[in-house]
Length: 114
Length: 111
Image (cartoon, rainbow over all chains, first blue to last red; front, side, top):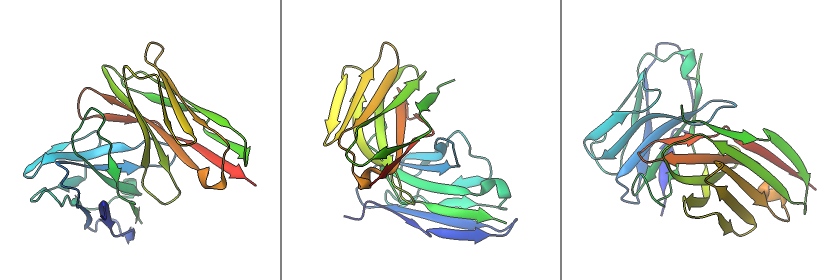
């Protein structure tokens, strides 16, 4: 059981380039999330999805886009990368969004924009 | 604004000793409080989840407490091991999809 798989683990982008961070889960979780983690700060929610075909903005969505065509996959797209997007990105999934359902996190993608 | 404050920011303890991490929150309405362990270069892993009615929960050598009246939680690590070196994150859930994350306490266990 792989859990939540993120690729790539590391990436360096030049300003203005675009890329897609991949996230796949094999637990049949309905809910999926993208967070960014900056040094000394708590994780911030970028986008989330409550099921295939449904996505919504979190706290810090600017500069990002997502899609959810299947239950398993939730890619995060960066268009026109900026230095402010240098961060560690975590994808997570959960069976539901409340109660005692825990979140399963991927191992992260460390992105540097230069 | 929903906030989660953790203290201390970091601490160093000797192997075998105990330590306690603190978490204060202003999240409302409250649904549950979670403690996560994050090893360097890895994603957070859940340690405990507590709802409003629970005031203590253990997971091995980790014991979390919750005082919903004062909006405080603590995580106690007993008989620390080198593998306990990590960042410990307090996460509070309101009655919607939103989680509020603390910045974490970095624990370093030295032999």
